[in-house]
Length: 523
Image (tube, rainbow, N blue to C red; front, side):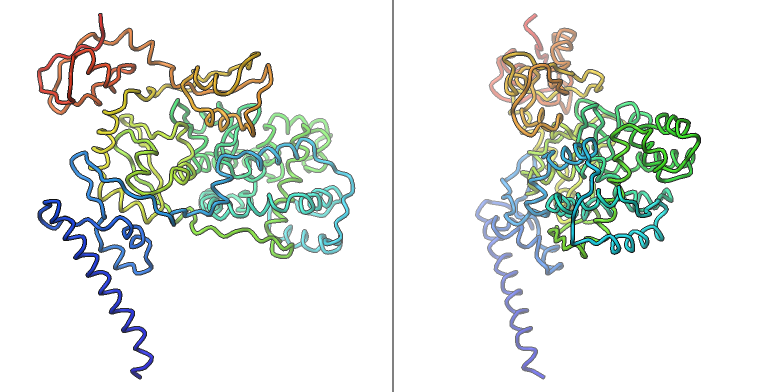
């Protein structure tokens, strides 16, 4: 009996020794720096290894290796293994190739006969019959649908594998919301046809997000848009809105095929098609009377459903990400934070923050009274944030005080600029004019390259939209109150930076005293 226990006992002893060594080393580090009490700092290279360790007790009981306090933070190392999603996801994060390819296929879908010997017609008929039996959609065989399915299988296998990888994250969220509204779970495939699971996808006419809401439709369902935030890009809020909208459409049409068609082209176009067809409510009879994109919409949806349901039979081998939506959690933030600041104190890569929080257009989480904004993080990082929340806010404030540039004030997106490209324009020039990044302009407009054409329309969320106008109306002086800092004062007066306040008042440090009068302008 003793022999099988030996490896386990040796492992237990090594773990105990390792933990004791870590504690001793951390304690020594703290004593060397004059820290008192039970403050512990772990060696930088060990912390994230412990945090991700399979030994849950060990990971949970070792304190954070860098104590953050009094607006002070020691640099946290990026975790080399913190890519909770594999590199494929990060590559597809803001690339629009899948989205644009799918949109193009809807407009230019060829319905000629496609030869694909790996899928005999009899086999397809049998599989469609099984799908038809378990869904409320009309998935009966017809030659047109067969050609769409075979064309997808023949030319789009890599793209579909990428979408299958992304679906591992998004589908649990979709299914939860759809089930709540008693909507067929297969509607989750609609988001693939709409956006190729790109939460920042934007169509040529301005439809945005996973579920491609137009501005007015999004507003109607409570999705706000501002200079910082576009809630149409928020996976949770947009999915909730889509479920509400789909439920409303079903109450009108009482047919899920017609719900799909009206979601794409609008209920008005579907009702016109019904009239023109002589009163038919069968989608395949209405199809010739629908807009071209909608005519390819339902076949694309059914083809996507078929491929996902029979992926294994067709040899699809998508990568398997290490996380899903339910392996993340949210924190309601209590002050303005940038992704850069969050990344520095949590070790979560900026690209991962962008993936988990796509609705923040400028990589900034604003803070507005009576408005809740949340940060989504991998679960194994939420504790790190919550345990050091006040110190993180203090650290962010200290960083902001060092910066000369202020962030843009939150303004409604009615001020969004639709810029027309002129001769001599290039992305860098346009980005500088509006105070944004080249990458942001590309994201907002689904640009695959830096090439522009004269007359092209670009959607831009300018960062310089209100600072100049509000500077002129700002008071000329300010009396310091208890709790004020240069950073908090600068935020009260958009367009006035910390460095400008220091220059105007000949200040060599950031120290303030209640009652001090500060000049805010030269006038």
